[in-house]
Image (tube, rainbow, N blue to C red; front, top):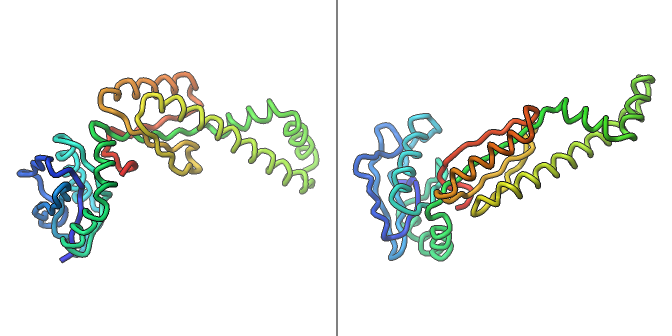
Length: 237
């Protein structure tokens, strides 16, 4: 039977999961597979595994319990290996990498920060601060048939939007990283220009959260900050 993998810990982790159940319906019984220095917390993999709320919560509960007792490398929901032997083989093959990561994430949690800016406010700023864009915008409004001018205007505005978002992204990451052990930058999207995960030591969590709040206050209502955490350090495994 296939093996569902929840997390990896060091061999000296207590792995106290007596009252915690795994994914599936009925809930799978948790167990461990081991090498000399590492433990993988696993269960039998359900045949019809789906990202249902019950299973997502079960997966997260296992991780949270493990993390209360020591450093844990969380696996993302749905990671399945062929069998226990293959999981043990990977623990052996990746021994050094896993031990290094366990040291790195010990005592840390992940915080994901997404930041968006009001599009109309950004466009108004660009037009007001760029003579070239403002003049081209005025000309195309006076001559709606000026196709080449509209194309040129669109390209200029797009480039300026990207440049300003990149500057804001770099500024925010630099300031927030002062209170984090590491940062992992994700891909931006249409709805936000910054998508970054920060590995934060538990003793620095309050300071980090305060720094995010201060950045949001300083930039005003035209910026929207979204913070998700504390989370298992998925982005740093």
